[in-house]
Image (tube, rainbow, N blue to C red; front, side, top):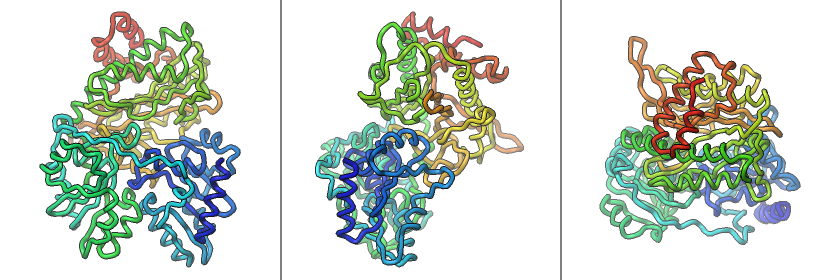
Length: 595
């Protein structure tokens, strides 16, 4: 099937004189996760992971993806003729390097300009110019051969009340205009769906588990334009927008609007605006490339968001703790599979007040499946759990109060010494970072060693960041904060840690063919003492679920580490126990006991 699709695409390429065709994982907004309509890379390669780029030449097809997906990609690409390029590995060229090496004078690079970000598009345009090659970006070739392509999503939009958003749309727009003025911008075109939803205090449902809606926004000095399918706006939303002086225009009109801008300075984020929009602006206006003014405003949560987020995490902790109790007391007695475990956890979340949706597809991975960082159980792969080994569950929920992301690895029975040693090291890693005290000005890159240290001591590492920022009823992954020991330009996660930012803390061990272990909490960055050396910062841990003591080797931990784990578990018990049954409460007392 994949080979046939590649053949059809190559025929399209030949008709247009295209030698290299690039298919990124993206929509018209450079979203991390995309709706079914936009899964062109999956259609062309068979690889279902959330990140990756396909490059097709006349002779070869390649897929580039990161370390989270190496194992999965190897399996899914079997028999497809698509070659896997493991990003970041020694000797593996970057996508741009590969394209440059295969580009010759008179040849042609092609991609759909609406799904390529402006920054990358400009690189390819420059590359083509230097090599005296051509650029073909006006057509979606995959769309030409994808006959049963799903429709563009059109789900209803709803208003996030100020009581949950913490600030009104008008206040947020005023802040953005102030930043625009500092940048010398007359107009700001906003393409990021997360930023648009945040700015307008609206949410939607156009991407699975990401409550956003397909739209563009243009902020001018005197007016605001929202480019959107009007059918997704009911009367309440239309009235709300009108009251806030927002003019509604058809979604697809963004390109003619950008083309018609005359002699003005237009601020865009080149990483989050598509190449076609940027080129349309450049016809008669000046492009100012910079970060979206909303990026930092959104990342630093306001007091209402922080207060509500703590409530969301308490609800989520109750759901996950109830799940842990059920799993621990039923394993080996009734049949439980990866999927049935995931379903049971989802039902516990649904019981919580103001629950909206999962914040991403639950990863429920038993045994060797846990070594695939983003494993997704299918009917074919669905493993039945045995009273031995590990079950890794990475999950989260959206509530009206906020968004959660938590991973716990559960011991289902007997464990090897190696499994316990690795689990204990991951626990130490997680706690080391959570209990950090640091001077203001640090980025996640400065602190990442605290998490990796106990694993590096064992000669072990994990091929991903240690943590990411978390959106507020938005994308569970949010920049510019994160924890990663080296800066990866494609990932906006090395920003300075500011008071009010929320970041995950999720070190892990992944032994291919055997097991995976990950422990993930969410941390709020808060101020600590201020003295002659400057402002010190620390983290407030807002994930309240036990770390499985059945897998811990206390003798592998220092007295300080044991104390920190005991204090954490005491907090878990105090917060969660009032919401449990008597049986669950007694069980929790055992699983939060001092060690």
